[in-house]
Amino acid sequence: MNVTLGIPRLQEIVVAASNKIKTPFMTCPLRLDKSKEDAERLADKMKEITVADIIERIKVSVVSITEKEGRNCRIYKLTMKLHKPIHYPKYTDVTLEDWEDTLRVGFVRGLEDAIQNHIVLLGKISGIKDYKDKLNSSNGVKNDHSNESESNRNGQANDDDDGDVDDTEDAEDLGFDAQKSKQQAMDEVEYEDGSEEETHDGEDDEDGKGGEDGNFEGVEHGKDEEDGKGDGDGDDSDIEVNGDDSDIEVNDNDKNVALDANNSQGLEETSKSEKRKSEADFKKTDRRIYVKARGMSFEIHFKFPAVEPHILLAQIAQRTAKKVCIQNFGKVGQCKVITCKEDGVMYYGENDGKRDDIPSSVKIEIPALQTSGVHFKTFWEMQDDLNVRYVYSNSVHDILNTYGVEAAKEIIIREVKHVFKSYAITVNIRHLMLIADFMTHTGGYRPLTRKGIADSTSPLVKMSFETASNFIVEAAYHGQVDTLETPSSRICLGLPVKMGTGCHDLMQKLEI
Image 1 (cartoon, helix red, strand yellow):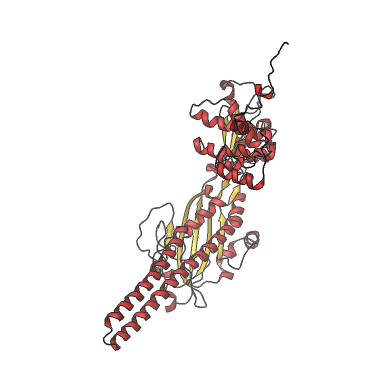
Image 2 (image 1 turned 180 degrees about the horizontal axis):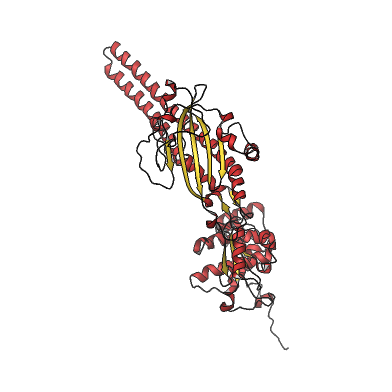
């Protein structure tokens, strides 16, 4: 589990004072009557399990077809082979029915939305390309007119040539800008599709032949029409196999087929309950025509008009699978078993009021849980197994909102101390207490920077930190007054600090 350490962590605490840190975690030790096996059981139940965790292999094949009405379409077949239950967490409560429902409803919905967003993005990229083509065509028209004018003019050949060069350069500049805009848009989505003639090439990996079964489920064989052979190219890719970029062969049986989505064989095989689940949130933009989740396999078919651009369905499915959860507990991500000896665990024994130092040999025998992400309610609901008095988190903002400002101050001291400890640097606790007091004395959590110190009521304190000229102008403009009560303001004027021996006056005893 990754945790921000070192100077970046110190900047995150003191300088940024961010509400959302990069690697938040929380820890809590188990009760003394609980074993390590109990800790593993709790950790497995709290782990976030996504669809990507149960996928062993993804295979995508593309088949070009002709509908009964004569329209050309492409059918994308997405097949996923799933891990066997023995690869799942040992103590998880996830069943086959759970992931089947998640795949059939949540994953399909997410996949449909991701495909639609990708198609919209490709349409915008295509618009940039069309704009470039228009510029090129207008450039050709200008050149034609200039050539005609050159042939009809005498004695002004040099002037005409200069004008033609200028017009050509201007058009080329516009074309370059359009090409640059297109390239920037393509870089943002990391999409590399090549030219229009290679729309069916470009899958990351390829395995076997498209339409290898000779028959496509949910598709009826239509009449042999000459128009149906136009786009007879298929694609069969497997993301676990590193294939070459050679052309993909397609069986002749897959070239001329007709599709009836309402009466497809695949939809007839699904049960009524499955239909209700998958069609409950069906949208007009959805493209699925076949969904099947049985055993260790999942298959879904999408229909695309031939005029739409080619998509990399395997990559879209991978990204979507990482976002759809089968099991999760709020904001908690991963969960693992550690011991109370770790720095991120707070434990002072059963009598937490004394805060006795527990020997490391004792702490190492007490299991604890560490999660990525912070959600205190998750630990509170497990108070029968966890010692919730020692719930700890490295997120100062979450501790402040849940346990109060005093707890947040202790977290600041503890986290800064851990940063210096990793470098074998010893810092007096009094310095850390001063920093924590300043950052939390207003009841909130502010950074130790000039922006954080700007809330101080003493102009001289703000001047002594940074950008003195700015604070002087601001204080003069607003008529601010310094009562010289703070140590920094008194030191600036050479006065003794009103603390310690400076909080009272010394008088000499005179005898007259």
